[in-house]
Length: 216
Image (cartoon, rainbow, N blue to C red; front, side, top):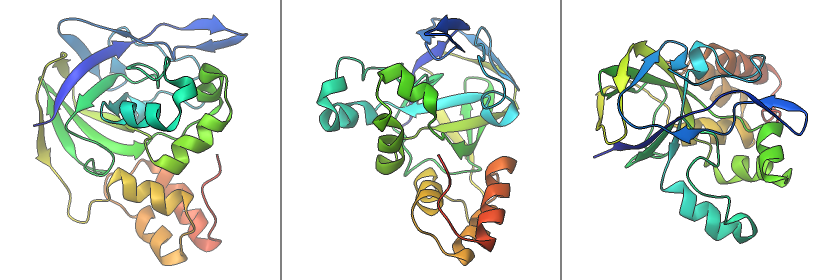
C-alpha cells in the first residue's frame, strides 16, 4: 500500500543570486493543503513554478537509491529532499502513477496532472548541468498534483486511489512520448490524455503538427 513517508515545505531564500524555495524541510503533524499547495510552502519563481497544476510535487522514495547507484559522485546529496519534493511517497513510482489519478491523502484529494520538467534550478542545486538531462533520460521525474479537495495530510498517511480515468497515461508513458521520438498520432493522443495539465497538453498538440521532443 502506498503511503506518505515525508511532508516537506520551504521558504523563499536567495542562493547564489537566485530566489528559490527549492530547499524543503520535513514537517511533523497535520499540514493543510489548498488549491495552491501546502501551508508554509513558498514559490521562488512563479513564472515556471507554482499554480493550481503544480500545487504539490510528489517524488518516489524508491528512486533515491537508483540515483545514488547511477551518480555516486552526488551520493551525499541524493537523499530525501534533494529534488525539492513536497511529498515523498513509498509504494508508488512513475510507472504506477497515472495522469488523472485521484489519490486520497489524509482528508485531501490530489489529482496527478503532469510530470516534473527539470530546469536550471535542479542544475544549480547539484552544481551539475548534466543532472537535467539525467532526469529526462532515466524518467525519475516525480509528478505534480492539483488539489481537488482541500484538507490536511501528514507523514504516515496512507494513499488511497479513488479514481483512474479510462485510457489514463502513466507518468512514465507521458515522459517517453514527450522526450523520445514520437509520431504525430501519439502526440495527438497525449494532447487528449484525461487530466493532463493544460500547458503540457497544449505543447503536445503543437508538437503533433511538427513532431519533435519537448524542449528542456
